[in-house]
Amino acid sequence: MNILAWVVLGLLAGAIAKAIYPGHQGGGILGTILLGIIGAFVGGSLGVFFTTGTFALAAPTLSIPGIAVAVIGAIVAVFLWNLFTRRGAV
Image 1: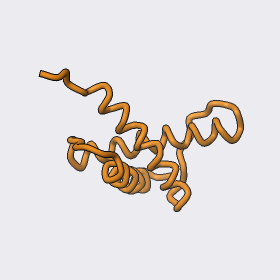
Image 2: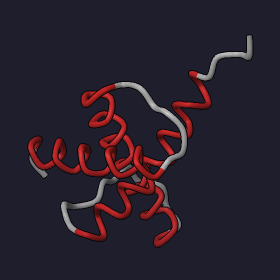
Image 3: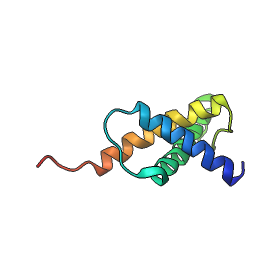
Image 4: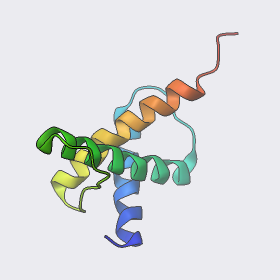
């Protein structure tokens, strides 16, 4: 998949994941795209792992099921991002 399709998939997946995930997430448009692209890789790799039983770095295509997998991966990426960047209660 070419780089423009990766950016579009990342933007869609990141925006949907940020809309679904509760609370405020910073990062702006670039952070949304980056988390979406990371989510696409996470979701695609988990999809390959659960269907074949082997780990492979993969990403979904720009389709409805591909976007769904990327959104699930982006939700995981947003959760992990919030987990690592959470500040202690002051």
